[in-house]
Image: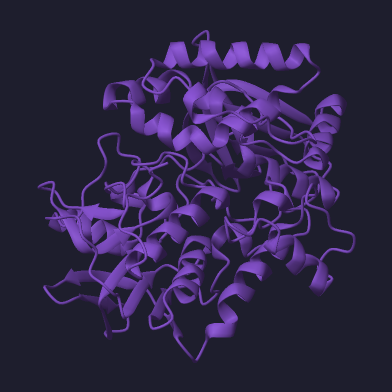
Amino acid sequence: MDGSFPHPARHVLIIGGGASGALMATHLLHSAPETRVTIVEKSGIFGCGIAYATDNPEHILNTRVQNMSAFPDDPDHFLRWLRTRDEDCGATDQCFVSRATYGRYLESLVSPWSDNRLRCVLGEVLRLEPTDKGVSAHLDDGTAVLADTAILATGHAVPAEPRGGLRGAWDFTPPEGLDARVVIVGTGLSMVDHVVALLARGHRGPITCLSRRGLLPQPHVSGAAQPIGRGEVPLGASVSALLRWLRRRVRTAEAQGIPWQLVLDGLRPHVAAIWRSWDTETRARFLRHCASRWEVHRHRMPPQSAQRIEAARATGQLTLLRARFAGAVPMGTHTGIATTQSDGTERMLIADHAIDCRGIRRNPETDSAPVIRDMLARGIARLDPLRLGLDTTLDARLVARGGVAARRVFAIGPCARGALWEITAIPDIRLQCAELARALSGQSDSALLRS
């Protein structure tokens, strides 16, 4: 395996038509004028995915407009789109808009190419067969799609069916009655979406949210990210040494009246490099001891959502419970939520409406898309050492069970987190897609995100 890209990729198959797939298609169509793209998506909603298909105006992006452009070299693209289409009157680069609005933006990126160089196929890929000359994707309706290259963009691993009486994090069916007892397992950004939606529709009943550490996402603040040069970051240092360095930066900034959030925003461009500089043991240590606190500080909620959450806590309607989720048991029209608190005390919560918002660290072998489960079972793909997702090289090539990198199969975005860790948000995914598109079009063969 010489690491070279097959030049050029005349026909690229993208498996998954959510945000990652839409961004990948957009960059391919812009970077490679002679390339055709086929997207296969089971939902029939091309560009949105589960995160942006919502029509609830209470579901707000947790990132400002200034960071949500599809193009890393054109940061104002999304803002211009908003202003020219009157999607949000008076939008600024510092505001937060609805997820539905962003879903329409993603759809607008691919819609001009339809029936020309882009084909969108309604269906689900069940099996992918790499060959010496290309790839063959077999769909659930018995048809097949042949292409030169395939890119897996299936998004997060999500359980196909709710378990133990719990609703899925993307199921926003309201409770039966405004006084229903709601229990939400998990206290991250998905929980925030559910709580603000409940409050907006006038829910009166108690809402209990539980997680092992009982931590809430912190709120965003206004201001520009504090610049941090790559040479200032202690790459390769231990987790504790890196955190000591970061705390010193925060203390220095706060002494000057600069919020800690802006320091963390300045570190964002270097997160992938930090992750790559660690060996597997160090990464595992970070996940065990620091990931939860990192995520609530790094992945923050919009100020308007923070205000609603705090108001509900102040009235006692919303309770945060620090406890370990021990399981869910259907009880007729109710659901029992078994918990174990830090002192070992066991407690059963009775819910009329229970939601599983435990986040994105699921089991890819059981919860991934069928095509990924099949590739793992056959050994033409493998999980990364920490089982975060598909194992890939830095240039997004899929790695097989024996350690050989594929020539014609790639994986991007949340389904392949192991190589880059935070490849779950638009600012990171768009960069990965731009680099891969350039490489596949023959404009670059450098490793993705090398800098």
